[in-house]
Image (tube, rainbow, N blue to C red; front, side):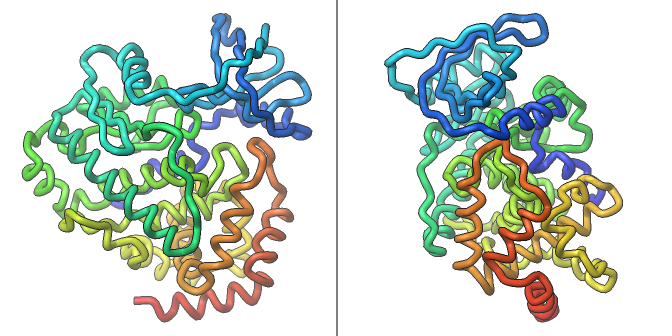
Length: 386
């Protein structure tokens, strides 16, 4: 179970940014934000394509990041672009019906749609499971909004429905993920794609439950707990990027994005009215951190803040995730105002601009104080957690 829990972790926060897109980001060093409706004709992999939307960032070489009406971000190299036209037509976000129609054309007629107040669940599994997912997500949405309101953080409303694709089996999910990610998803049971702003997963009951009661019974079993936590983890990423708490393709340190998502993955599945688990000790991560604490290296906190690669290293991954949870837990409990200000600073960053390790450390110490002082307080605080 532990192995499965961590097998998909390397994809988190990197979230399907391919090597090519990372290389593209280097072209945006002198980029400035731009707001306009653009119609772009470009050629990729020998195929001519057309996309319309608003330019989020324009690069000096003619490349751009374009947000389409369905929320998908297109990172276009200047050499790919063949024509750009602008018009006076105002940009408008696609409606739920328009997105549903587009996804049905993309995925096939066997997919159905279930809409809630804030989500569009696209599924080819049982309607009961789609409704269970929709209800779970809406509970998370309400709790997420209430939590940050209590911290004095003003979130924006999502610009459109939050899309979740739910496949009937691991097999069909894996086939889609290979196309979506470009690689086999391996042990990932779900993931958030930062480019499309969608959560993708499969039916954890493998279509074996046909009523809400059956689904609840199956997913409240101890062995299912971590799988449900993963679904919530990925949906938390989607919420953070859709409400202005974080900015897609900005330099979001792994410890923040992953630690926040882990902070929220403690639901009370027995409660139908709320999300009483937010802010509770994540016992899974806490147990891992207690194992790690005696062998923390001297510069462990500095590594956590600056070395995203350690989250993808199989030898350090479990420790890094537990420490990310612990640091977020500590800061949110002891320094909530500074933490909120720090998040706002990160969210204001221009997409596709990578910060140096020195800049990341400067951001952190400006908000929370000298690293040795923070580390000492952090260690003392975690020693009192139970």
